[in-house]
Picture 1 (cartoon, helix red, strand yellow):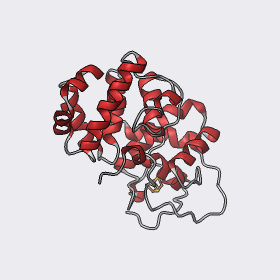
Picture 2 (tube, rainbow, N blue to C red):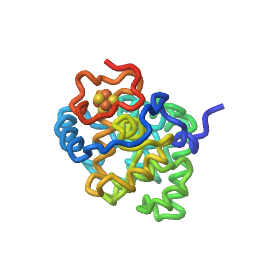
Picture 3 (cartoon, rainbow, N blue to C red):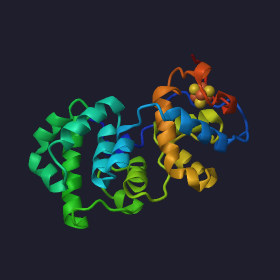
Length: 241
Ligand code: SF4
């Protein structure tokens, strides 16, 4: 039985978050952001970031983020390109039909469930929001399969509004840095809303997701070649390269 999509974004991420320090040490977040901005410039950014940079479509960001749940970015990228090569609106997505959507987005994780969920979301967008994606966090959270990560991405990347989007990478790296001490992405979001300077709220996700995909990997991060190692407490990192 497929894992319910509504639970995917709430699943506990990563196992390497055991904390070895009893209290948080002051982390130089300004310096970390400054270094990461330069470091990620040459790296491939996540597909949702790419969409926001090229055409800022809330609908495409919403759909792509749902495709990305429990799926590698490379697979999401290809599926997203195939899907948006055929459709641009909620009406067109519904007209494709569940089976055709599933074929187009395969092999993203839970592709059959996601195909069904996308149709339900599009029906709701048409019936309740005039075919538009709502630009309000609470309204977005009412949509099937939309958790805080997805809703925050739509708000920040789709509408350019302030929000803190926390996925597995942001949660893991923020804890490793020693910047927060939390057990779930939701707790990390709340902790970051408290302490992360507002000017970094939107880009923090882009920077850490890109860093997590390339350097601060989940199992064995590349600490020996990490540009921010001098500012990282490496909390819970038992094995590194
Ligand atoms: S030093 Fe290691 S744990 Fe810290 S951010 Fe870099 S790769 Fe991640």
